[in-house]
Length: 464
Image 1: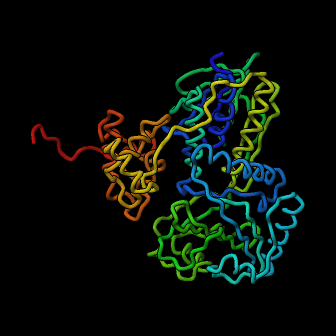
Image 2: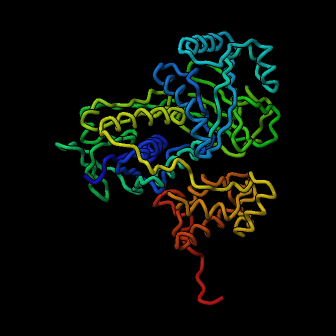
């Protein structure tokens, strides 16, 4: 056998499973089709850590609640940005009031702690900047905001340091069952393994031919990233319930900006997003918007298909809006199953720590001077908006599973996400990538093989 376990897909769940399995004496590989891991995570690099109150499905709620309790310790251990922030699920009319009351009753039945159904006066005591006309709200103290991309990268880096092989730019073309184990075929290789964890959504291989995995998404969430001129800034996550599917969400980001999410069937343009947001933020105008993103709102149940577990095959299919929250819980369950089936021992050399790194904008002046004394590149600011220096960019390229694309640098460091949208720093990032990867600037890509940032040089000179 080439591997004990092959994990197909390097998203948040694939990386979490790799991290958990690297605690044991197993030969593991992750196969990912893209240049980088965690490429499926939204560019809105702030996600909510749910507690299960909002979920209609009991299993998903239990996984959310389990993941919520695990993430605080995991993020502290792996140095991932995480901030506890309460959530107010607000009712503004009779229809939304019934929904909020049902949410509260479900949460109590499920044994979720630190939640309360509160009246109007208490709502405004908790959140004085709330602008909508609230009549009642479900208040949870359990929720938080997290950097999902950073969490996936942290999982991957620790797994890599503990011996997991990451095979990037390999596309899985088929999975076949053998008398003992499996054969996984990619566009580059053929592997035999004892166990397969398939986290690739929407793909059906030979082994899946008699199964139907459908996970349609009919809802879109439209995100508006706002500047600091917004008057109605809130310290809690606010969810204005409209009906069973539609809501408007306001939260702060880890970068201290304000993020509005409009979940709706009928939003079709930037202007309509602004109009809808005015129900929540009356003062908002187009000039307040720094950036706009669109994403599918996956409300379906994520399925862990372990019907072939005795043969050594687990498929995690579907997408879910709370995937970041449930990833630790799912990875723990999968890990326990595999360890029991393969009867393997613990990795006594396991290092449960991420390699050190520095976020220059978060350091004190004294710490910055000490860092610059060690490496002068930390004194050269590349992104003026978000205060990202050359030393950070070089480090993110040289780290385990380091950035190889412009997007990889942007997501790891926060460069280009300021008011100028990279107008000042994008060319500098390309030059640094070219130097560190020993490539020409024209060979550097934005994200994938066919996304070169520079088509060609305008003119070549033999001498200057």
